[in-house]
Length: 379
Image (tube, rainbow, N blue to C red; front, side):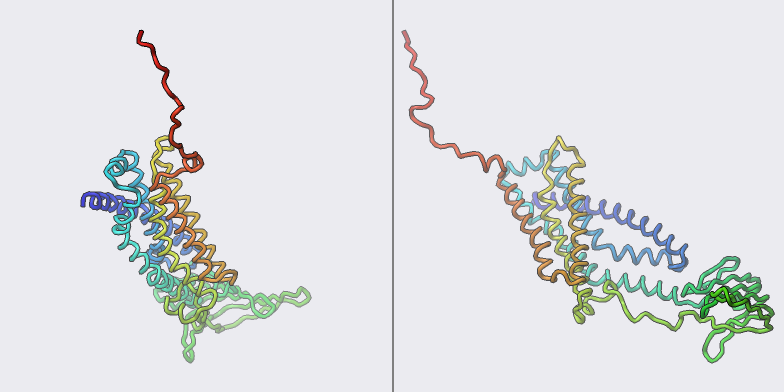
């Protein structure tokens, strides 16, 4: 049918262009953010693009929802501006008749949003957290960069080495500052190397001295020289974090452990689909053309509605996670309320109702004595 095919064709072009622009913007922002984390030592510099890809993949439900919303608003606004909507209305089409072709176009996008929210979002978060934890749990010596001061994983030691040998396990001019039991220890040595002793990695220093400075000023300094000194170099390699955040758990894991935090995360994932459905209805209602507002008026209103809805979704997740509201009551209040408001607004606009028409009294039949023309004498 011409009505359905022409609308879906233009929506496809608009959605594709919007999706490419939004993905490019998000990838640029995530690249800058990931480079900042890599410069601070939180992310492996060799895995910057991989971390960026996982992060963008995790944000795909939000990007797809916004792209669908902007595509519908932009397409219908253009049709209002070029008087195409007037032609469709004159041919007997109402605003409600646009609901079916819009959802026929949007259902693959809604399905993709569901898959990305329930599967892609936790998988991307788990992969990103796994890489960051693996990088954080590397040994202290692996953190060291020649010619630079580096902190250990627990931020209680600072290393400086001057490597000049092709073997990464050997180093020269080693400097270590550490906080130990109620004292600050400064160790320096001419050389050092890594050695495995009973399955544990140790840093063996040779020809150096050790300076111990207690925190209490009443105690004196202790200086000792050594020919060989060993310290554990494993860092936190054997330590793992037993607690996994809710955003990195699978949807089945959230259902198996219905704690407040998991229920809040589950409500956010399901809410992304419900929000996308509501965005289709809201886009149909906010797309009316007004020449006095300009071309960007509808887009500004759409972005404001999206930001407000998305922030309420995140705020509701925190409320459910803290136990202030139940999942069912919150989802009924937010998503159900927006859906009813969108349906009511669409019904009013479809019937061309307005506040003035509602308040204006209906005109009754004309009185037979009213507005009678005076008889004119032909003579």
